[in-house]
Length: 419
Image (cartoon, rainbow, N blue to C red; front, side, top):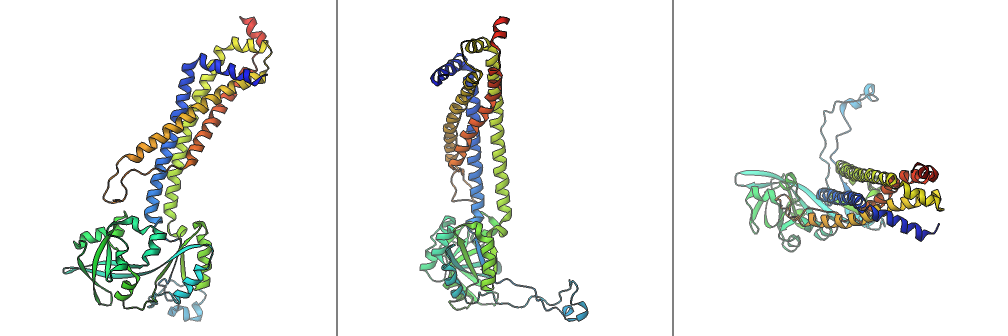
């Protein structure tokens, strides 16, 4: 049958019951709106929470870990050499924290096409002197430019700039919570003591706030040169090599490769932060489940409306079939009605979902733990809009498929005879 004629009949049936059609379209629109707004907000929240840790975490970290001495006395007795030994009377030995041949290792890694960038680092424990009290903390000596480029370092500085620790010698950026404990303002001089007993004066040039209070109580940052000076080491002294890859999914394999190649310990981001990825996956799964449930519920509404339409239009369907319309033509008419409802409701839902997402994105969100975040986080990934529209069409198609099949099987003779 002529496609144009089928479209006109479908439009007539839609407009004849325009209130029911509008209710069905609003149901689809509401489902798509909530689907997009919910996923955008939940995944924006996931990005924010994961970013607090993952943005500051290298894909691979090379370092020398303190290990238990494997030459325990009981293992030297032939009688017990093949047994499982759980007695460890000799404590870990004083191993060098420094990475051997760090500069040749860095040059070798830089030649690897899989690597996006490298940031050397020095990690050392110190005591911050607050009157008669010593507060334990950690000084991180960093390559400022590499940290800014690879780990978004500037995003976490609430006062001052990261460049200051490069420009000014003997300067430091304090975790905000630690600065509050020390009552240290910008420009103040603080005293630190190394585990070896050496004292050093540092000028506070900024505050760092990660959003995790326990980290901000201990973490501080200074330049590589200042950190080397504090612990009395040469300018080749490095305790960590932080590596960012072009694809973080390569991290476990490359970490094993570097461990064997450079004879250092290696940690990959998946192993270190497995709990964060698990939490994000579960939250996303819940969001998708709720959104899809809304769409399915809307589909049942469309199914009921089309069923009622078929019962009310028995005479019209019988006349169509009696005048030469085949069962497949009637099927197409009702499928077209369902898809029209799904498409119009889906487009309206996408537009309204975007507007609600923008509204959420503009709501002020002020907290002392996250001073750099000023509004609620929202993710505007186009995939959510594509999924929403696709599901609206798929759901309404199946919602209209069964009523359409029923309409296509109606016997016009039986209907007319009944009348």
